[in-house]
Length: 58
Ligand code: SF4
Ligand code: SF4
Image (cartoon, rainbow, N blue to C red; front, side):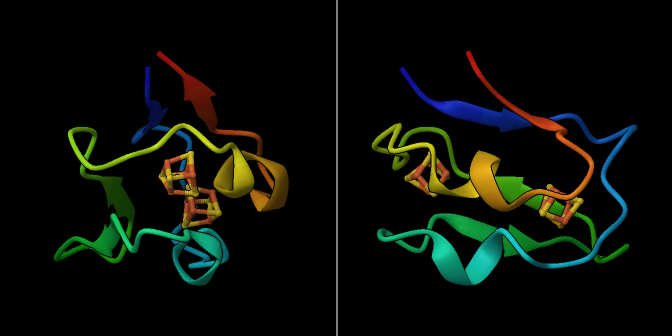
């Protein structure tokens, strides 16, 4: 299990990136964030802080 960011809804605020305990969230060229799903430990911390609720479990 992992979490995934809905790229259409991400507003590129960056809030999710520093809370990830395994540092598997990074910025793309457009500053929207992307999760390296193979490294995600499914803790849910990123989803809790996202202001637009665009991160969900997959
Ligand atoms: S669910 Fe946890 S481990 Fe996975 S990307 Fe979000 S903060 Fe990182
Ligand atoms: S917290 Fe949500 S809106 Fe902000 S960069 Fe992360 S996924 Fe995008």
